[in-house]
Image (cartoon, rainbow, N blue to C red; front, side, top):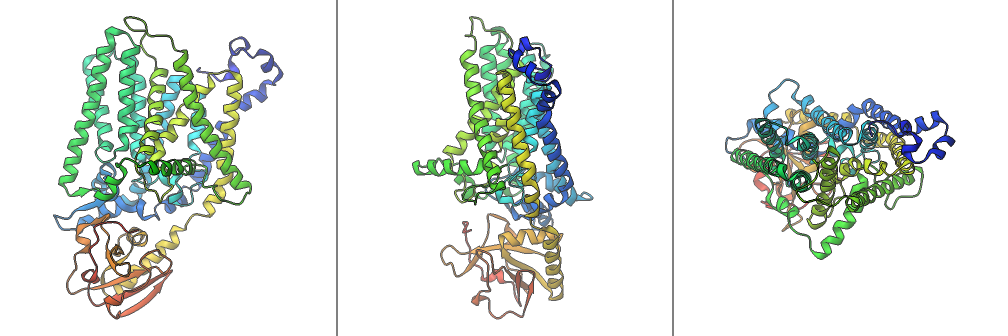
Length: 570
């Protein structure tokens, strides 16, 4: 299917009478309407890109890699860097390697956008190879509308999920690139020279090992699909070529694990690690009650990637469009699974000695249906954070749904019309919601002003270090261009009236008291935890209100008064 459905003859489409009743220009417009709407959404994103990125980077979660990489320059040689609930070695290695480059801040902010485009291009190229240009354009129209209803706040998902460095987007992008490579390589395994096949296995293994070193989701989004393609291609293809397919697949998997092992060992040896309790928590199997919680989270989190949170909202145009987008997304998910099941049922039985060489369409479909199935399975049987509804753990299944849309286009003109109309409505919903989402975004320039004012006040009071709530502290360091040090602290679990160290995302030297210096407490009266000064700290030397923050200056390092908390109390 290299052309649009309009260009097919009535005999091939099997709907000649219907096509004759539809004016030729109208039908041509209909096929490309989703692409035009998707292109308009891209224009809107580009027009507001600076504000979107500024809003994304207001989240302390988005700033983790940047802050740790820069602050580690002055950390002791034996300091440990703790990256949070998973060891995102790949992205923090990038920030560590580029922290001395000119314009490094701009590079860190724009790099996720560039790599998101690379991942999108990989999916579209793979789709075009497997199904043709028009189906690929439909997939592209659906994918570029990512974030339509959830671009305003990082915890809503959406663009904040792919434009932040530590939200698993790099894992998905790598999986998309590996999948695209397999679409070209696997059907040609029998004719590729051994040295090229070996080079491909080593290259893909190295590429996949980088995210796997710190992110277990690559097992579902990259390794499992690779294994599925290998096994099924060897089984369905010619028997005399099965050994080469298996050798290539197993060699790629082996190189993936070898790269992951070596990379993790190097990073761990340099003192970079995940926060153990949170990291182990996601890898814990869900309890029976947890399965219900995971299903509820799935129903909220998946549409949040694009449709926003319509649950419990007053009915209105925007909420209704969010509901429509969510309904279309779940309908596409069910239709994708049903389409694959139908293809399996209609497939010819495997003959003795194997069949023909598997095609690019077979590889593309096998890869992405495995991403969908394995991704949903891991989410359901694992233990994602029960208090969050963001969709970062569902990025793989979300893209897989779009990548499998072409299967529905094979059903005939009726299904082509349905999919075209559905993608058009999906894109229109994203465009309509975009304006409201941008208006609701936090203003980074105002926050930067507060951060720079805090840095100036710290210099005036000769303050060496500050401490504050996690959601303020990391962001203040980033927004001030590292002109002020504000390390995260939290309420103690054993005594909610006291303040303790915060080790989930930190450098181990942050909670070591510095002698003979002044420090400050950065309190946020509206925050959940660090809202007021502690009586144990004594009387502050000075106080100041900056923005919505209350600043208290002390004649010593208040780290000496903090309790030691090994867990997370947020």
